[in-house]
Amino acid sequence: MSETYSKLMKYLDKSTALETALVLFQWDSETLAPEKSMELTAKSIGILSSEYYNSLINEDVKSLLAKLGEEKEQEQLDFNQKAIVKKLRKTYEEMEHIPPEEYQAYQELIAKAPGIWTKAKQEHNYPVFAPYLEEIMDYNKKFAGYRVKEGQNLYDVLLNDYEEGFNTKQLDEFFGKVKSAIVPLLKEVVKKNDRIKKEFNYQSFDTEKQKQFCSFISQYVGFDLSKGVIAESAHPFTTKLHNQDVRITNHFFEDNLESAIFSVIHETGHALYEMNVDSAITLSPVGTGASMGMHESQSRFFENIVGRSKSFWIPIFSKLKDTFPEQLKDITLDSFIKGINKSVPNLIRTDADELTYSLHIIIRYEIEKMIFAGEAKITELPDIWNQKYKEYLGVVPPSDSEGILQDIHWACGNIGYFPSYAIGSAIAAQIYYHMVSIMPFCQYLEEGNLAPIREYLKEHIHKYGATKNTNEILMDMMNEPLNPDYYVRYLTEKYTKLYEFCTVKSSKKK
Ligand SMILES: [Zn+2]
Image (cartoon, rainbow, N blue to C red):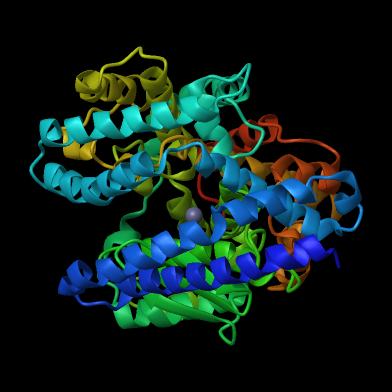
C-alpha cells in the first residue's frame, strides 16, 4: 500500500469514529432521547462536530491529498482508494475556502433557524422566519461564490454538492420535460378522480397490528434484522454506522393504513442500499450511497414501482386482510391497488402521491433558482409559492404554514437539495425499464421472490457505494446516462392505465 495513503488512513479512521458517534447522537435524539436532553447534550455534540471538522480539515491532510494527486502515487492506489481520495478532496474543497469564523457563524445560524421556523410555522407567521431565511440564503450565495468555477452559476455550485455533475442547464431540461407531461396528465386525472375510492384507508387500524405488519413487510422486501433496527420517530428516516448496523424508523397513524406501510418500504429501500455496500469500503468516506438522488432512487423504486404494483401484492394481500379482517372485508386486490395509487393534488409535499410529487419539487427548484438569480425577494416568496401551486397543482395554501413554511430544509441550510428527490424518482423509472427488459421482473414479484431483484441492484449499484457517481453507475448498468424520458413514460403509462381502467366496469380478472 502507498505509504502516503497509510498516513491518510489514520486521519480517516479518526474522522469515521467521530462521525459514528455523531450519527448515534442524532439517532438517539430522534428516537429515544427525552425532550429536555438537547440543551445539555448539544454541548457534547458541538465539541465532537468540531473535532470531526478538524480531523479532516487540517494542513497534514491537505498536504497528503496534494501528494496523493501526483502520478506516481496515483499508480499505487487501487480503485477504492482512488475514489476515497477523490471524495475527500471534494469535501476538502467544499469546506476549505470558507473562513473558519464565517463557518462557525453559519453553523450557529442553522442551529438556531429550525427553532424559529417551527415557531413561525405553528403561528402561521412567515415574517418571523423571513430574516433568518434571508441570512441563510446570503451565506449560501457567499459560500458558493468562494468556490464557483468558470461556466457555473452560484446555484450550480450547490446543486453539484448533492448531485455531482448536475447543473441548472440539465435540470431545466429535465424539469421542463416532466412539467409539460405531468401538468396536462394531472388535469385529466383530476376530472376522473371520483371513480377511485380509497375510503378504506381511513378507518381505524390498531397501531400494534400495523407495527407487526410493517415489520413483516420490511423483512419481506429484504431488511435483515441481524444487521438492522426498526424504531419510531416523528419523521421516518434511515441512518447507519456501517453495513452491519443500518437503522430505520417508521411512524404510525391509527386513521391511516398506507402511511406506515409505504414509509417502511421506502426506508427499507434506503436500508438495502446501505446493507449492501461492499465491506471493503463501508468504513470510509465512500461507504454510502453514490448521491442523494441515487439513494432516493432505491427507496422510491421499492416504495412506488415495486410496492405499489399489483404483482407485489398478489402473494401478500391476504396477509394484510388477515391482519385487518373487519376493515378490509369488502376490499378486493384491484380496488386496493387503485386506492393506493390514487392521485389527488394537495398542498403538502410529504403527503404527495407519485404523480404530483415532482410538481412540488419543480416549484421549490424554480424558487431556489429565482432567489439565486436575484429575481425574487425573500418577502415575496409566499406569493410566488402560492401562485405556482395554483398554476401547477390547482390548489392554494390557506396559510403560509401549508405553503412556503412547510419544509424544514431551508432552515437547516439545505439549498439545492430538493431536485435530488425528483432525480431519484426518474432514476428509479429508468432502472425499472432496464430491469424488465433483462429479467422476468413481474413474475418474480408474483412468486414472492424478491431476491433476484435485490441481487441485481446490489451487484450493479449498492456494492459500489460512492466509488462511482450517478451517471457512471447508470452508464455501466445500461449504457445510458440519466434520461428523464423513462420517468415521463412511466407516469404516463401508469396513470393512463389506472384511470382508464376505472372507466370500464370493474373487471374481476386476476
Ligand atoms: Zn428517502
